[in-house]
Image (cartoon, rainbow, N blue to C red; front, side):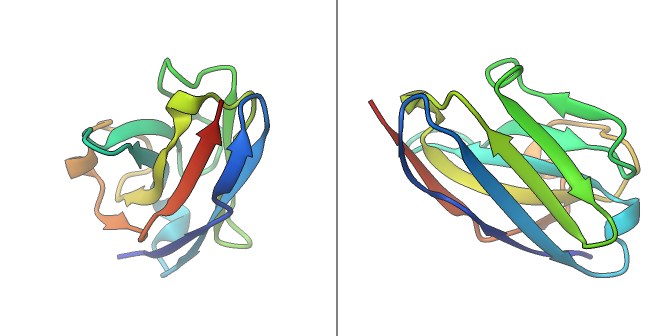
Length: 125
């Protein structure tokens, strides 16, 4: 398994940018699909973005496509989510997660094996 810790959350205004980072440990990181999920109060955890093991293939939820960008650095064992043009509806706890496949096989949270504790993002209007 992979151990994950997120950082970079905070309080921003609508239209601002924020960069989330996920530090990973564990020898399976470089062969895992890495993803970001988010969960707002009262709602289910939802898929945001993912990147294949090499970082070449990326996947996005329609709600963030064109505004968010996911990337990874396998040399540093990190995954980054650059969030631009933030909206109040982006407010949520954001989680980093790992799926034990080289490419994304499912956007369901149950398909991801390892999770970080989460980082809070609040976007004020």
